[in-house]
Image (cartoon, rainbow, N blue to C red; front, side, top):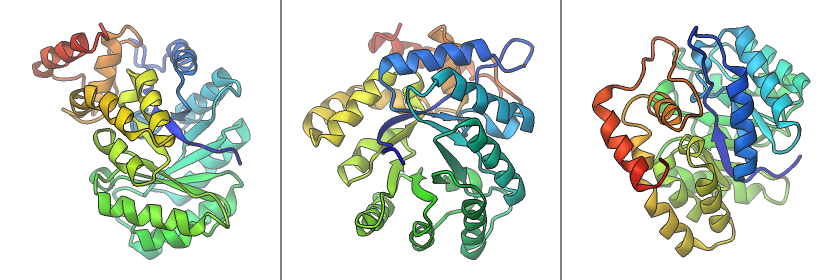
Length: 298
């Protein structure tokens, strides 16, 4: 298994004016991220509007992204969901298409207990031979996978990491401890899923970030990650501080509403999103535009 560290962009899924997936825009985004130094691309995660893509679209976006990347950097396919059966099927499809890793969100809405989570993720890992990254985002799923459950799952050869979106540094410390305890047996990667606190997490020993903001500032997030991975934390902090307001502006409304509007203003995608999400409320436009001008993004 290849190492997976640094800036992993949670790529938006561009949509055409008729609501269909804009594959030409995906191809352009992929090329841009490779040029800008992004270390890996997450295809069809939360930011990629996984809940509102059809099953066919979901698989096709992953397949096309793999095709466009053409082996230049790893592709992490978002294949999790709240049906174990469907998650296994989609993970198999992504593996067959050539995904390097898959990202498996905790089942949302069902609210499984820890035994259910353990059984769910084990069933997927037993069924598909591909490196698998767990994804914990309780604010969206009403489900929190606890470190004790992660520690048990980490023993499985196919489960190689976790994206932790909580901004709780005690939780991060617990996960880093699990990773360090396992380092003689296998690599188990910890990624922040929270842009505003990802550098703080990396100071504690995480391996990178699965980033929303990196859609718009790929080179900058990648540079911060590389500095942190090389233990140049003073320089990393100085650079990261420049973008702290921008990180927060990426979440003034539900993700991916703000970042899709930002990408639209950067002329990277059209200003379209799938219901029940809607385009970013105009009350936030000027504030974001001012910050983009300040950062010389426009």
